[in-house]
Structure formats: structure tokens, C-alpha cells
Image (cartoon, rainbow, N blue to C red; front, side, top):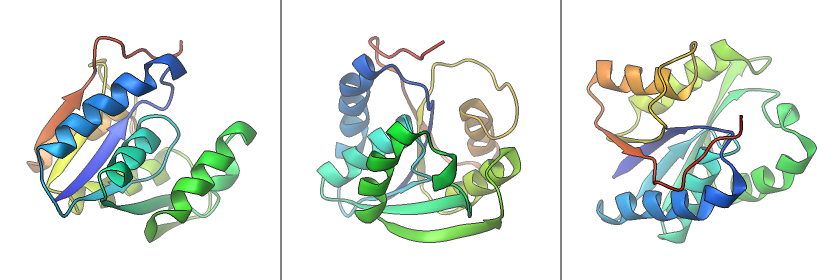
Length: 158
């Protein structure tokens, strides 16, 4: 089963265990072999990657741009590097710099390769292209089934 992820990058640290448990619950129902497809963005994407790996699945990465790692904040680099080393990078899009166009293209590539989308989403409507709600809308339009994960403990930084 090939599963993609979209979700908020600004989850509060205290809610991460609950979000990971909710993602794991969805993934456990799917059976094996399990392949998770992600851009490895901070927040929901990385929580998802850890859940996939924890279940013995494989993680495939679609990188939105050549400078993607360089756009991370210093405190985010170690976790990104650790997860990228445990994954297979299947695509690095030809964008020179990370930004909305690169994120939209990466999300389109991810959606085209999965059978299910997990959305760590609070239900707030899209506020532009490339964000969580926009990816959910794209999945709906293309017929990709969606599992929304937002446990009661989930919160975003404001």
C-alpha cells in the first residue's frame, strides 16, 4: 500500500505523540508492505515518516527543490538528515529554490503515486497553494481517498 502525507508543519511539540499514535492507527489498518511518500517537511511529514518506519515500512521522499534542506531552521536539520538517511529519495524536482511552486509540484508528484492520503489537518480552509488544505482539495479532485487525522490533543503554533 502506497500512502502519502500532507499536514501542518507547525504542530506544537506536546501533541506529537498523539498525532503519531493516530497516524500509526491508520497505517496499521492498511497492512503490509507499506510505503510512505513524503517531502519530509518538519511537523506532520516527519511524524508520518517515523510512524511508517516504526511499522517496518519504507519511506520514499519527493524533494520539492534543490535547496530544500538549506531552507530548514538550524534546529530542524538533524531530524531531517536522520529521516532522509532512513528513506529513499525517489525524486528531486528541478526547482532551484523552495517556495509555493516547488511545494505544489512536489505535492502533485506525491499524490500521483499513492493510493491513500493521510492529512494531519485541523480543517481550516486553504490559504493559498501548496498548503495542507490545498493538498486535500487536490486529492479530492483527483479521487485519492483521504484519512484526516486530528486527535483532540492536536494543536498548531500560532
